[in-house]
Image 1 (spheres, rainbow, N blue to C red):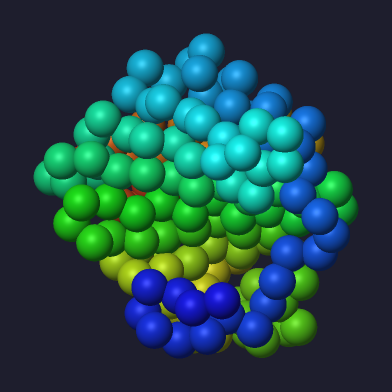
Image 2: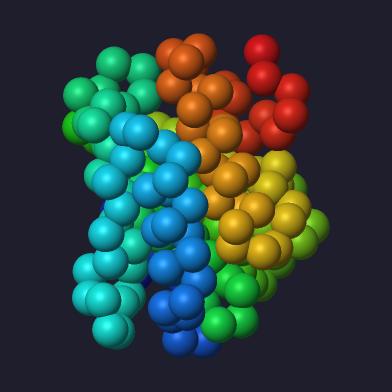
Length: 160
C-alpha cells in the first residue's frame, strides 16, 4: 500500500474487515458529529467506512476520514483534506520499525502521514473497543478543528 508521500507501507492490518465494528463506528459518528456523513463502501462486504466532512482543519474546505477495522482489533483512521493534508491513527504491528512507539498504537502526523520511523509517534489513544477509539478520534479532531491547529491531534486530554 502506498502512502501519500509515495513511500510503501510494509505494515498491514491483520485479519478481515469487521463489518459489525464499522457499523458501530458509523452509528456513533452519525449520532455525534454534525459535520460528518459516514457511509460504507459496500454495505454487505465493506472494506472501508468513508466519513465525508463538510469542513476541514486549518482552512481546508472539506475533509474525509477513511476507517478500516479488522476482526483482530487492528485499525486505521486516515484523514485527508482539500489542502492535501494527511494524518492517521493506527493500531497494528509495525515490526518495531517505529523507534518511538513501544506498542501497536501509533500516529502518523500531518502534513503527509509519513511512515518515516523518526516521524511516527506513539498514539495518545490507548483504548481498544471501537466505540472508545471512535469517540477519541472525534474528540481529537474536534479540538483541532476549534483551535485551528494540528497540535491537539495526538495530545490526548491535554489540548493547548
